[in-house]
Image 1 (cartoon, rainbow, N blue to C red):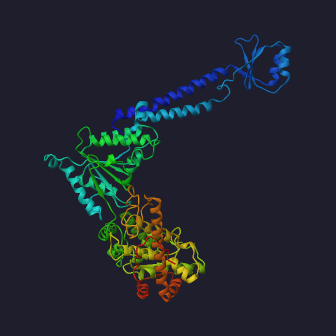
Image 2: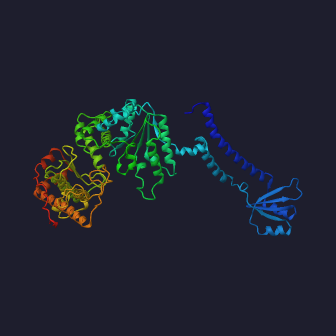
Image 3: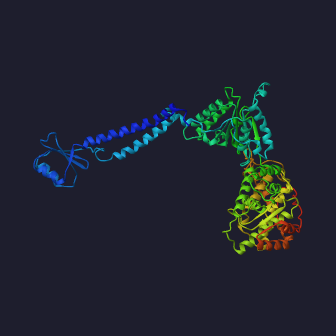
Length: 626
């Protein structure tokens, strides 16, 4: 919106001055072309030859594809032009009549190529217009260095902590920031220094951006929001200029909040990419560090940022005086998930059988975004099925979609493949039921889902735990090998369907030996390099590079192999003891494709419990079990 008639006039002038200049250039070129050809009279090739033969031509000019003849005695001199024709006798005719002739460089205006010249002129004019809209060429180039941050004014972001659930600890930590923005004198009167930066750290989808907007909404201060990638450009110096411009705008609106999403895009450790690293990104980071240091007093500006990769951030960003506070926004527990579901359920029409508490219990590990996606999928399923409200089965199906992907009804398995998958999944379930302390099995399915899953066994814990004993991890290894062991026992052969189970078991066993110190042979020594490991990558984390001698590395590999082989052997023993139950469960699963509820519980209650996997005695020589 313009500020008044004067501003409108300036904008109009910026548009029309370059356009008028372009029109003037086109007009000059058109006049030049007209002046060149206006006094020329067109004729035919035969008439031109007749004029030459009659001695009425004073001179011939070859101009590209045109031939111009100057007639004798004409007042003013008459010009005759004709399109050149391939005539071998024409030069001989000129020589016989002693008519001088010459050739000139073709004139683009006269050759009709004026439109080809107009195209680059139009592009030049368009570029001039774009610069003029930014206030002239100089100011237009400076616009590249302007920050693209979106500012929400004092009225607030429209988000408060009432819209945020499941992150009570993080919200409590940020109450102090809100109090400072509202009543800064309360803190500065005691000589205290307000926090300059707050770094929100957590897995994707946990609501870090939403929390930052809620802080601004509660404090009722302007909110500048920008992505870290918006600073870095191809041109060197642009990112640093944008950082300066962002803080300059923030000073004009303080107290306020600057929020940088995905801070790792600009805050990656300097030198991490080697000598040929991104110089522009490092300059941008240096400028951000300088601005956060604040050589002038910027007490009313709080810088908030979010990242799920804190391990790659530059250490200078995390020191005191910059991002003073690091607030963890983790995946919610069962109470947090229930609170998140209640927030999202306010906008939905739920049926009477939908129990949010039960949904929270069957969704361990779900982040806020996952829960919102599950409820949205449930609403879409209910609408597709013409339900008047979202039913319990809609929610359960939606959760399975989020976890395992869409059902692949087009992926038809042969009868042999269905039998293999059924025994494979029942093997997992029986090993889980026969392992003391393992998470209970809630559902078994042989309906293909997602990209590669031909079936799945769903285990859900009775309660959430953050510590896992060695016995629990060994049980998990046994359950991983349950599917492969079932294939060996029933079919006498194996397939590649257990590749993911083996991969996960190998990673877990390696962590138990090299990181968790759970091997008596190796000892409680950390041989894994996880100093830069991302804590939010999930259950298994990144690959670990052994930091040990070659001899120790061999011992580690043998111990990992021993853990896996004994778990595999235990899975075989469990299924041999429960062979009848395996056959019965697989038969029902082949018929119904899904096994859950009381019928599955009654099956698994009959599983013979296995003894815990014992640690073999320590010895210098590691024997491989048969």
